[in-house]
Amino acid sequence: MSFKTTCPYCGVGCGIEISRSGSNLKLTGDKASPVNQGMLCIKGQTLLETVGTDEDRLLSPSIGSWDETIHTIRDHFLTTPKHEIALYLSGQMLMEDLYVAKKFADSFGIKNIESNSRLCMYSTVEANKRAYGADIVPVSYDDIYLAETIFIIGSNTADCHPIVFNHVRKSKAFVVCVDVYETTTAKQADLFIQVEPGRDMALIDDLVNQPWFKDKKTLSIYSQGLTQSTDATDKVNALINAHIYTGNINKPGCGVLSLTGQCNAMGGREIGVRTGDLTATEFFSTDQIKVLWVMATNPAHSMINYRKIDTLIVSDFTKTLTTQDADIVLPACSWSEKTGHQKNSERRYLEQNAFLPPAGESRPDWEIICLVAKSLGLKGFDYQSAAEIWYEMDIDDHWAPQIKVDEIPVVIKPTDRTYGQSVNNGRLLAQWHSMSRTQKSKTLNKLTKQHPDSVSIHHVTNTELFKNKTVELDKYSKQPCFKG
Image (tube, rainbow, N blue to C red; front, side, top):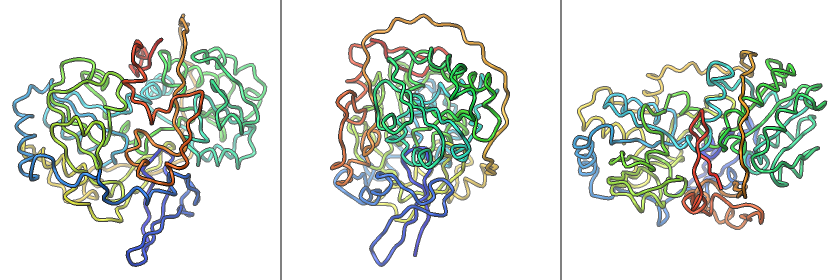
């Protein structure tokens, strides 16, 4: 017996095949998947080492039965002004989970709803809107094989999105990498350009004069190294402008590809998980929010201005720094126990299929939300399966390798900036986010090596990383970064 599913880590969207022989499971890359063609990075290969019930697995609600827990949550929601309630979601949740969460917020009247994508990709969203009129990623992995030059900036693709980089290395393109130090990606590029931290705008503006950019079919690839700065939206728009000025847009092998960090960050963008009041960073940096429901993320590790919330509710599959702070902890299903859809970096809708039963009393995120919604008397939350939710969503899942976009450059005003000492932080090949899943793998722990010139965001909390530093926001997207 075999099952096909999708990797729950980054936004590449690799297909996985699970085969079962008796009680034994075997995991391989899905050779039929157009995304990874059977390839898997080391994190994907070791996923089975992270499933099961260890001492950290959450198996039952923290304050009693499900009925008692849901009634307690209901009472908090009914006795708290709605502008003091917030939902903090995650790109790790499936399309169905996010849809039900958004529907719940709209039905109950909660305006404060965001995801942890606020910390990584909102500058890309705003840049796309300014350039294309909508949040569109117009290119796909297919363009990697059609490009003559691949320009990588702000992305250690070889470590953070290995399967995309495998496609890059298999292509015949001339690879140019720009970064602040010689990363794994830089070492394998045909041309490495080292740039001082924060000073990449001048380099982007000069792309129109570089023969390997302007005279070739060029595909640009970027990630959070470009989007986590105080002028991040402008930088992304400057990169798109360079493609427009050189005609490297709306053609096979040409355009700008943003690599998303989480498996369903793109899905959250499509569902419209975005606040009508405070941003996610303001949930923690202001005193307005009194009741916060966190799902599938670990803000005690990742949030810049993390603070203690009066009533903190957390849904997760395992213990984290955030569940330790929580007043109410809800056991959610892990990826191996959940069925639904995610949307990857190239806009494909991919299926995630459960191949294990829910551990203990855990439930899918959408089902937990429905329990709370029904306890509050809200209608339309009687779903019996993820398939029923997907049917209601009525999404056009047709996929095209390229989407035509406007070719009107965005006017960018010069910004004067004072540059100080910088801290380089990055992800490691063998770990993921706050390591709540990857740290369960003995193989990954043995392979973990930290770069001497950078700080691993897996091993340091943002509270520590941002200590004594001034937090700034990108002026268009309000995506945070730090100064100092």
